[in-house]
Image (cartoon, rainbow, N blue to C red):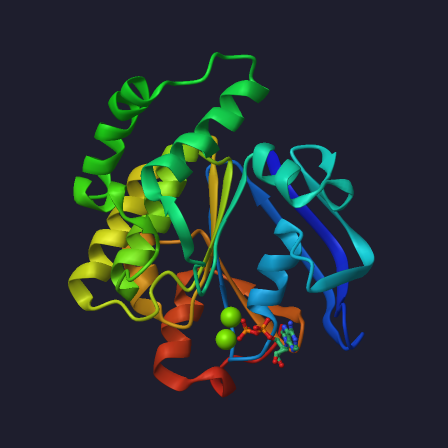
Length: 251
Ligand code: ADP
Ligand code: MG
Ligand code: MG
């Protein structure tokens, strides 16, 4: 079943009207992991942010359907409630809001949408504990303010915890490998793999093959100057690692 269908998507930077996305096409089905690779500045983060409705960008053409609904007509919060999750390349810090209360609010917003009673703090802790274990996160993180003073690796792990708790149908993970040492990379990758089910999907944005070795995407797409110029399997990522982007001829 198709989860996400992007057709000829074009988008500009809202402020300057500079065109960044120049006709992106992508279909993601349930159970699939896709990776988007591409040089710095090719538009990968812009594409991810446009999907979640980031206000810095304006869609100028094309369509995006998510679970059969017009994603572009939905506010960012509605997209999130509909099951789209995104980890940002530079996660925000939320001073004064503890991790656990942030997560509890997010989960209860979803429960409300499903007509379920909200979790109180004790119930929420019971719900959260196994998820913490799954992402190998120390319970001490919960009382700290969201991302405040977190190391790069801790921020990434925290993003995956948010994903585990919210249980998205589609997770967009933008460079979750950046700034991670080898052990942290493996932990984060394994946590992502542990969250995969036959009905959800992951769209990974990454520069490096090493993350893909753990996560094993079904499709690898190469983005160049705002379009996907090539799609293949993980062998494209290996080719890229060995010969650089010049070794990949558009097809
Ligand atoms: P990637 O993630 O592939 O490295 P980005 O999507 O971050 O690429 O950026 C694509 C291009 O758009 C770059 O030239 C970048 O400088 C520019 N760009 C993206 N967002 C903004 C913005 N909010 N303001 C100005 N320029 C931007
Ligand atoms: Mg970049
Ligand atoms: Mg980027």
